[in-house]
Amino acid sequence: MSKDFKTFSLEELTIKIKEISGKWHKGVAKGDQGAGRTLEKLLGVEENNISLPDYGTIEIKSKIIKKNEPQGLISLFTKEPLPEASVPQLIKSMGWKHHNAGRKYPRTEQVFSSTINLELSTNRGFFIDVTEDKIYIKFDSSKVVRNDPDRSRSKAYINLGEWLDDIERRKNPHYSEVMPLHYLRKDLEDQFIKKLNNTFFCLCRSKKDGETINYQYFEGYILKDLISEKIANMFKRGLFIDFGARTNHNHGTKLRMKKENLFEMFKISEKIL
Image (cartoon, rainbow, N blue to C red; front, side):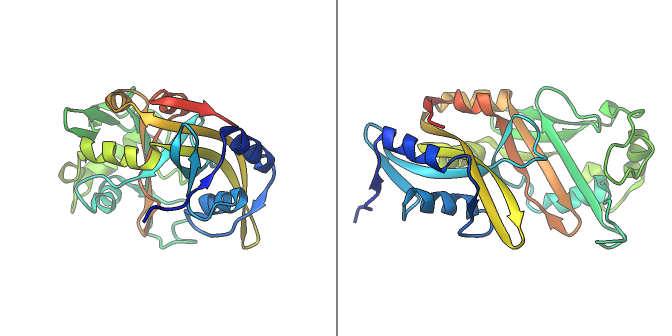
């Protein structure tokens, strides 16, 4: 049986989303689905799909832009690298003291956070290498900028040379047993198509008021007909892999890209908000 989607004209959707934008709206659900579920209710949509003449069925997607996210980057989705369960081993072998270790968390709590892209290696020596079928996250100790100060919140080391000396001494595991990590390109391509193709993609902010999460929607696009050949270009430019995990909690490894690069990947990329 076919689903009965709510039908908007593009003009009606544009008017409706502009009425919604700029104001703070009380969330109707918590967790990762809160922003999307709230937008659906504001649009009067029961399913997370709408029908647009000349566009067909469009899925509603919302993405929260957080204050601490790197400027100009959009988080596309979270996906853990291979081998499975490798991030906890990455923390053990290459992490550093969490700034709340011994206070909010156990004294042994460590953290690993890094935003890595294809253009440059990080000052800790991490970089991305793309092959025909895999995307590798690699480490090269010779690329560590030893004299750079430790800019982590805990300031656990005077400089990154001290950090490198520390991780070289670690065992069970040593980082050489953990690195490199990787993704299968086909897995990321499939995830990209599933998450973003044929969507009404709306960016929003969130803020907490007591136990309530409120959302403010400020930018929206119709994204349709992904040009599959451009996915390969995405892997070569504009892809960022963002780790954010501590010993007892993994926030999820995020794949991000620059907003302008994202919208270039669709035959139709129409800004309506």
